[in-house]
Image 1: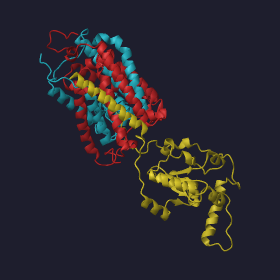
Image 2 (image 1 turned 180 degrees about the vertical axis):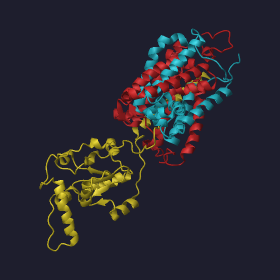
Image 3 (image 1 turned 90 degrees about the vertical axis):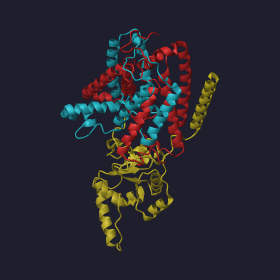
Image 4 (image 1 turned 120 degrees about the vertical axis):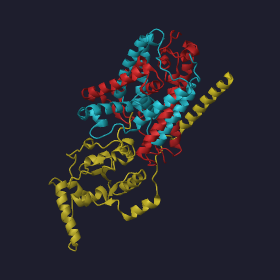
Length: 212
Length: 172
Length: 214
């Protein structure tokens, strides 16, 4: 009987060590539920419902919409040079760090991604969608914004009414965003600290006090 | 004196079973077990019945029973009820149901009661300060590898060992 | 992934309360079977004579931890939906010290005191009474110490985050540590323990003439 318990113990210990060693080399604990469904994604991409125009964004910023969250996916240097008012900077390389993902609270905010063009933002959109985070992409990105909003060009003679009103909007917007000046300023004065928009940290656990 | 019908399980077997129960709780509910929270809610319930205004004005009580909230409608409260029933069942089946006081040989029963009361008081206070007790923080927090829970667990054991010498008369 | 079931909506709140009750029964039953309804047995842990507390606790933690990780690995359990105790470092450490004292003084922890009271331990009743009072006092004192209770807030941090190691690695280290502690516990027990009959007998009953001896 004593022998039996010794064998049981040795077996138990060995089993535990093997289980543990396997865990150590595996991605255990890191797997997430995947929402990947190619058909849905493609349909959404084609319908372009996830895109917003810079004019839209400008209007929302001017309106000071509280549910707006602009995410600048460029490098910190580019962000420092100029960023959209109240945008937070999450370089694409760091987008999937835990702290940054927690900031992307799509239940509380309408998240709008932008980069220099549309590429990074679009790619980030797909990846975030797979994680179950819904976002929008600002079409044309910073390049378009700089040309259209900050330095709008008057439309040609053959322009349609649409284009003319769009131009008028851009002129007004450019005044707003340039603070009356013409070109882009460096070292943005507004320096919105991301801190003052502290999001709900764990956006998934909404249930009250699950502690003990 | 009636001998006990059934001895205790081997600690590893009991631990294994406990681990399974804990795992089942995580699997089913997405949270672990706990104890002190349920007790706290009961306290809040009683205070609320006696003086509802007091509860509403105290930020800690209000979290559980402020306004119209019923503090008893909670996972932990029902779990604790189950714990009492389960403990009773086990004791009954093992012939361990008996009114008695556990203590060491060098202390009186009254003395033990007083220390039990004091210890309980400390535990009650400390459990809320640590936001959990051994069930909630050590077991559940330990299994999920929460940093604060492990810190709590280590500190608790060290503190207990540290003071054990000074109260050894109670137990050995 | 379809677990945790409640978070995926397999059943509602009311059902969860029933489940809580059922799990509680299993929990209490196991605690009592482990011998945790006896304050003396629990306290002897801290005199190295009966290391049951350590063995049971760490076995349970290891089993649950390994289970969680394997369920996650098998794409069954979504760990991000599992409640993680937030870390309030200073508050928890202070609470841990107080609880350490309370454990040795009182001989129980909140969960085991319930089990003990359920089978008639009078010292358990006193403990529970004290605990209720202690919690009430905490509530009363809370407004003045509120800042301290939130101090050292590090968020929902795990050992894995803190040490920047994968959870699987941490689990392996925990297993090794637990095995080491079990081995140590066996050694200490053999060195210090009393003969088995003494530690399983009730120590004092109202009707007893002779108090239990060593």
